[in-house]
Image 1 (cartoon, rainbow, N blue to C red):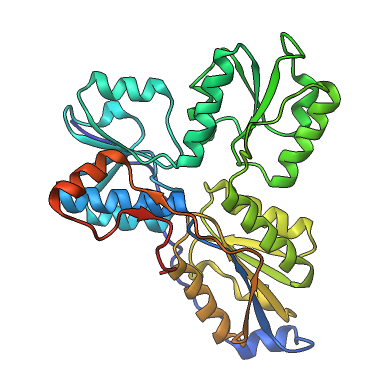
Image 2: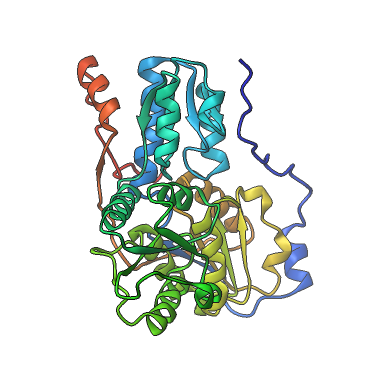
Length: 359
């Protein structure tokens, strides 16, 4: 059977850069140059867990290991796993019958699980536990016959997975601009849930407007907004007013990375750009820039951030000040299907996701 791999963009071919002297001559910088480095940044516990799951599956079952969709939304991570023998596919019907398939950190709908079972596939569910929590809330409130207003981007994998849990009860709200279009059966039985593909501010503005229309709208029983999304946005909000330029490391299909660019601009950064790799940074961005803010999305390994910092140092931004707004120590157990295999093999090297050093 022929499989169709998930399409990935390739790193930009390096070009001749202008020298630091040429950049300085084009637009002199007033004041000393420095970098404000956001913390937290990069890998969250759910991403770490999912990546380890693929690595451990390859190690113990051997390649190929199939993964439905990108395990996490990062070009470098996916390419690295492909080199080790992972095969990324769009749907389970592209996986040979009886083979092993891993569900990505973003989660899947019950229909995807049923499809895998019908084809006799062995499965490992690497869905982030925080996403699973929202799935369970959707099932619970649908069972109680609530209308569920799911705030997030229609078409995003996390949103598709959650809406698939209760399609007859869920309406997807893409942002504040769609609040006026919402209709419900009973205004007394409405609850909002969220997949954090929007910025935290945009999500809460959507909630505010929904509550104006539906005063008895219920909040989720616990905070649905991902801690990693919140923490990374809080950090960049603190940096942005002081930054002439903010560079966000992350892939184009990573909603939380894209949102970081938007938040940086909204909170005062003079310019902000997203890059996958350091070789995508345009040295023209440095013209007249004294302070550069740097952060990365929740799917980004730290090595990519360090590459950007190395480039910045070459252009005189060697002073790095880490701006810490939160400490993250959340740990998640690896998927239960994988834990059983590791226990049987006597592998105790990694049982948890979330504590990996930034490398």
